[in-house]
Image (cartoon, rainbow, N blue to C red; front, side):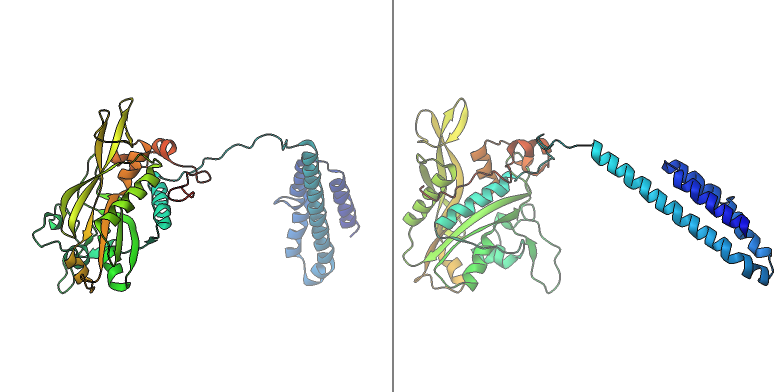
Length: 363
């Protein structure tokens, strides 16, 4: 018993004077490790009689617990001392500029979408949305597009496999189905824009299989082509932020509008680059087609359950990606979807410092 007491006192004294974590660890291994002195004493208990184990077991267990507690306390004290010393020696200069982490950017398409929504909100339009997977009726039939129209061809439209007894489904080729759904569920007057993704089987420098489109629809009483021209002119002046915007309306044909007009905007050449603004007929100018439009066809109004003798309207549509290209000087539509970080860094907008048109239309 005296030997165990002396061993306990000696081990605890050694632990108390240990001044490094390595020294404490060495004492732990010497006492409690696989070949440690206390471990050896614990192993002798197995060969003792019950009476001997009852007599000698408690002092050995007390020895193990006391040494274990002393090692843990010493280790904690040394770790705290090391932390205190580190905190005292290490200082942070709060006046130094912080390293900038990589930052994302607002994609030009998202930026232009926001700009368009802002402009048309000032003109009294609301935003309407619809499904990107459409049925044949909403995408074509209700818009007065006949069965023989080229737009319905397989090489132009992404169709889903036909299922017996089900409507023919497809990826919408324009956001015009949103106009149909709105006219069928919302009583006039109606003033909406319908932005979103659309899909067509086409791919080159100015076309991609998926692109973004925005369409507008006005349904009211007494609507004329003059209202359409004023709306488009006001919109384009606000979007390009120029007052010298000149429009040219050319007769055209769309199944869902009658009469139909293509809208060109004048541009001038500056250092060999086309800049939107100015008279396209001037010596240093020309014309760019920017959108299609027209008065909503009577058949479309009837298909939506409205009386075309009471309600008239106009509609227009344009590619968001193309507007971004014209405004911000991009020349290849495919780059919009390549995910090239260099391109995004150059043409993207800071999320905290994006351009805004919040001054309002005509501001």
